[in-house]
Image (tube, rainbow, N blue to C red; front, side, top):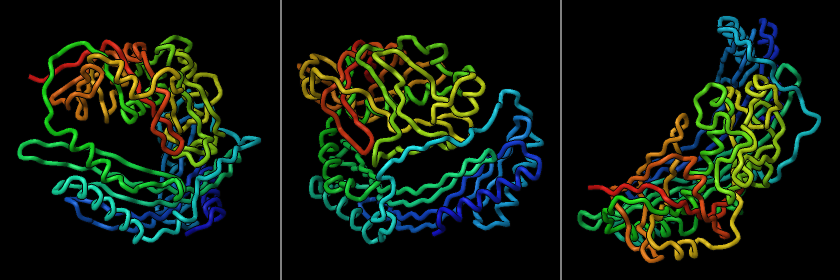
Length: 445
């Protein structure tokens, strides 16, 4: 594996070559990594892979036009050639008067502990295989004859970022994770469920019983029934609620707003959700899955409140969209011009637990997995419910089949009337249960 100082030198070589070829600005990302993975299929190990990868990616800018070039050869000659190629392409690109500048170096970059664990970086594939086999065995112990698929993997990466204004940054990170899908068949009846676990450091990784938990839930989805079409409250379980609320961050990207293709246009400082909803993005959480000291362009990371008591406070800005809007970047930039959130979390409630929310729902729909994210341009929602339960008299009565939900996403956010005080947690993430009143639920014929 290459040391980070070598990756910085390669990035400097590529950046200098781009500027010498006439580019007005340039930035270069270099990376070198190792990954181990085991894929599961039909309750057996399908494949085991060990992969070493390296990359040099150059972005050159001339009169606002952008040229890209990359190579997987980590040597000085290839780096210089990639830099020259990017500059040549930038000169051929359409000029963009909205481009102002790449970011300059900051006076201070935060430190975020726990993003790289030597125990994960040095893992042996035998350990990944052991996690996988234990996952299969635990699922079959709960549901004999079920079909288990999924996989486990570990990743280590070192990377560097250099730009022509003086940014010189490097870091290392690790990720270990596993996911499983268990399918149970009883004649023509089928039940299935998905679950996962992931972490930055090995001590946070808890895959034991992952297959068993998925199998237990899969059994509960046997005997699904169709329901009548009606307007009713829906209760989003932790995984569904997190995925749904994360889409608010994705659609608050200033790029989509500036291009006129976002339902968030003109919504800053306006109320877009219930008073109960406060959403934050915190990239500085130690050991968080999406934690980072700086964004993909080298802007320092900082916590950000996106929605406060239902009011949209800002968009997410890259250096390009910030320059176009005349504001400061928020530390969410990608080198492609858009924005990417980090650890996105809602503020938990303080009145009811998840169990109490269900108990206080007389007639409704509980959705265990699956987001209800909208069309990013119109904000319209039309989503199938693949893992849902009908709520009757405050209890999960039976699984549902052939069910859809529809409406307008901002109406749904405004109709949130409960957020649980308890939640599922993953590194950097909290996932409470939420309830939304008056949602159209369409049953199958």
